[in-house]
Image (tube, rainbow, N blue to C red; front, side, top):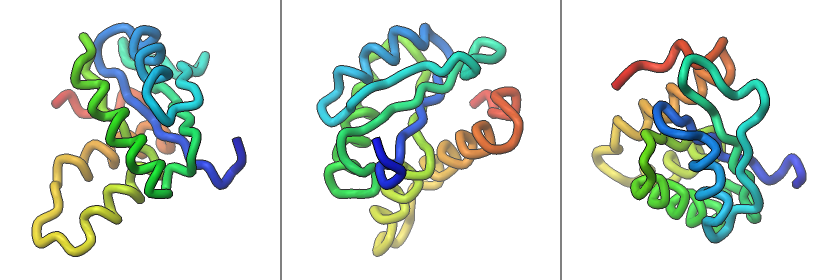
Length: 125
């Protein structure tokens, strides 16, 4: 993977992150999904999802949709975000009169988690 292929980050707030990573690795358009050794804290985990296409491309956005759809069928509470997901969501929201604030809140929570000190900063609901 090169720097031009941003990853997605899936936050597992409950459930088995290994099961989630295995399921996400099988999603069409996903090269791999891994739980980094330092990606677990206080019953939560962050999974790095590496797409086969640039996460900011149309193919990458389609992969993001499939990743999010796949998490609905898992016995886990999972939200998917990261910089590429924020960009994809922002692109979709352009031209809409009322963007979906809950999606933006989820992405912001993951950003704060990854860039400002940890999983304990994630809100419970």
